[in-house]
Image 1: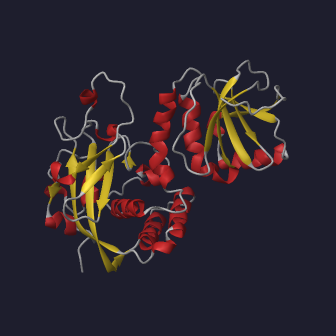
Image 2: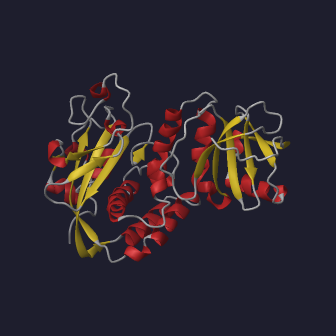
Image 3: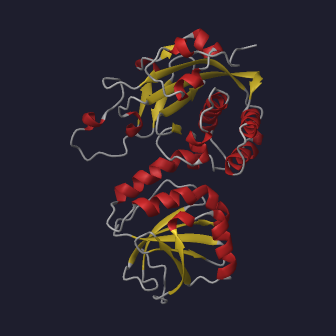
Length: 357
């Protein structure tokens, strides 16, 4: 644990701010009022002695009292820093802090993560509790990277395909369920109170496998589905730029503006360099989680202290439902997002534009 406060151990309590009021506009107003000073902190009401500060480099920091003492490293996006520090702040008797920092211009990208930390982490919360929250945001943070790997681009292609069709279903899926927008954090690509959907996209037509980055993704829940999309290279197909353009039109048609559109435009800008990568959907299938299915379950881990389990699984070992008509002609998206997970897919099929030319 480092001491980042230096010799200045007491800080003046400058003003107060409510947890529910944390947003980009308020932060920007606060920057002006702080006038580049770095020795003043805002007390955040509704929390256990948590504070906010902004330094002259426009780095915003949130400090939460924490008894976590272990040195730890996290898989974080470049703009986000989390560290453990010590020192006294204002009138607080606390001495040890969890410090979360990022550029002010990234507040809209990280603010929901911070709010979740403020709301759920207490002074005596464990390191595993913090890691659990971080894992819930990993999928969203992936889209903030300036350069995606080929594997990440293929995965993003499948998610955007499914998202575009879900937005055009009747009724349309709530756009906020997609992890890319950072509204509903979770371990799955699409998350809501009614469903959890994990999308795996592959260019391997035969002998394909999938990576499970956290075993908890496939712990049994009746509302959880795996959707597998197989794609193949085709210069007449779509690229990520095209899919973002379709998504922007879809969001506009639904009257959605602001943050969601900005997220898609940022992804589109970052993927302009990959316009030569064009694909078409070869087939698609789905699997609803079952208690006796092929995935590792909580009871399989028993009473061990093993955590953060990840593994590879062959797709052939998963009883996916494949159907040439479904994969090319029918609205798989509407079925998955409808919440009617126990019904026969053919009963609720609707024609969409996944058909090959």
